[in-house]
Length: 65
Image (cartoon, rainbow, N blue to C red; front, top):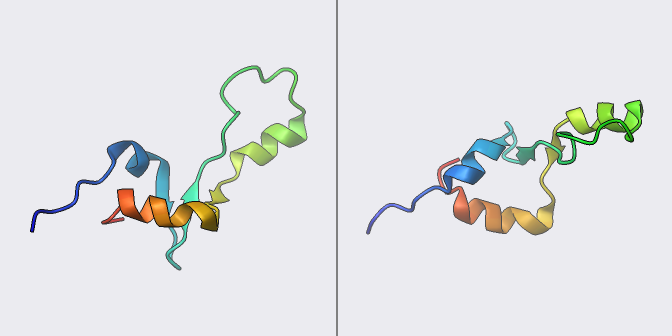
């Protein structure tokens, strides 16, 4: 049985926590920052836990993470 290939794009964007949850960075922090409030930009810096609805698909494309 061959090994499953890891999606390299996903591997660069997701990390696993100690409890096995997937952590990601938030979107909308790259440009057009002048119209966004300081509070909004500050909150976009914090990592977010991947939603449970997506975890099944993410585990499929990240088999060894």
